Structure formats: structure tokens, C-alpha cells
Length: 244
Image 1 (cartoon, rainbow, N blue to C red):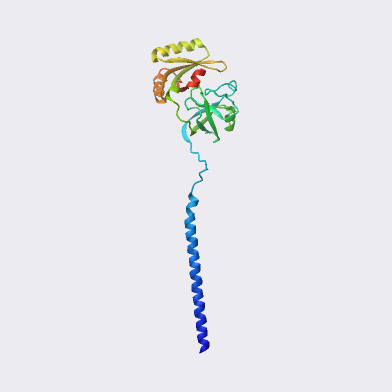
Image 2: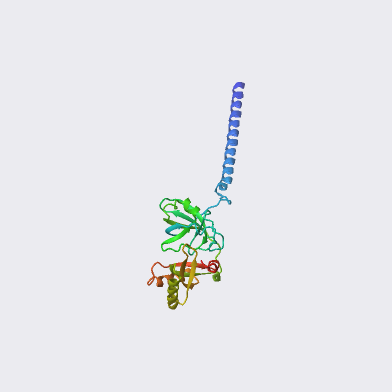
């Protein structure tokens, strides 16, 4: 009889220990779960040092490149053009704008900084440096279809520091250029000659002095009815003084 009581007591003690161990395990698991939940949001916190670039599309067209005789000469923004750096010329984007150029024929890309004005050939939208052209295999063909994506742009310039005009022609003969300029001035009040230091030098005829690109585009549409291959250009204070 006593042996049965001892056995019963031992079994009760074992059951109590099992319940105690089970409760301890449950508490430990609950604690781990709470800790995991408490730290889970940390995984979703973005790295503040990460650089995420989301370029904005700026248009498609033909790209070309330029080297000599411009290498070593002042660009339109005043700095010396080095054709082995990743820079480019654009007609209207502000100086300092960073642009991603995507070669639509092979998918290659290059990021450049706008320091110059051009290209002054109808149908082309950007002139790349020699180094930038190499990055997207443009040296051989000379011209390629590209898409321009804006990566970043500098703060807007004061209105007085830049204006827009429409280029209606470029001539090696200054006398002929002056004749066109004079005729345009009679019709549109404002027309000027700007020398482009090329080989041979070219005299560009620019019509109008618009405060906004939209205003220049309206003038461009008017001129398009009587002049082939005209396009809008931006004249910054520095490039206007430099006569580019």
C-alpha cells in the first residue's frame, strides 16, 4: 500500500515537472516571437547613404561627337573643353545638367555633364566628347540614335542670365549670313550673327530673344513655314559674350 502511494507521488511530481518545463518553453518561444516582431521593422529601414538615381526622360534623337579643333578651347560655360572627359554639348539644357545617354542601337549608356552649346545640325540633339562617345561605341559610326535621361539639374539661372533664340542658318560666308540676318531682322525685329569657331568658321544666324523656351518654340513654328531646319537654342550670358 505504501509502495503504491510512493509511486503515485512520484508520478505526480513528474507530471508537475513536465508542466513546469512546458510552461517555461512556451514563455521562451513567446519571448523570441516578441523579439523578432520588435526587430522586424529594422529590416525595412532604407539605407540613408544609398544613392538611388531615377533619371527622367528628356527626348530621343541623334547623337554625334566632337573633338578637334575644339579640344583645349573654352566651352560655352567658360571652362576649357577636354575631349577625354565625360562632358557634352546641348542646345537648351542648363550648364551643369547631368544626363544619361542611352545608345538605342546597342543599349550602352554613359553619364555626361553639359558644358557647351550644340549640336548646330538639324536632327541632332546632343554632341558628346570623344571619351563619352567611346563609352557607347559612337566613334565608328559617328552618329547614333539615343535617348536622353536627366539625372540632375542645377538651380534655375536668373532670367536675365539667359535667353532663347531660333537658329535659321549657319554660313561660312559672312556676307551671305549678314544678308539673311538683315532680312530676318526686318521681319522679326531681332536677329544676330554668332561666330562658331570651327574649321572653317561658321556664322550662325539667330532670330529672336525669348525669355522662355516655350516662347522660342512658338517662334520656331512660325519660322518653320519659311525656313528649313531651324531649331531653338539657348544663349547663356557666358556663351553670348564668348560669341559661340
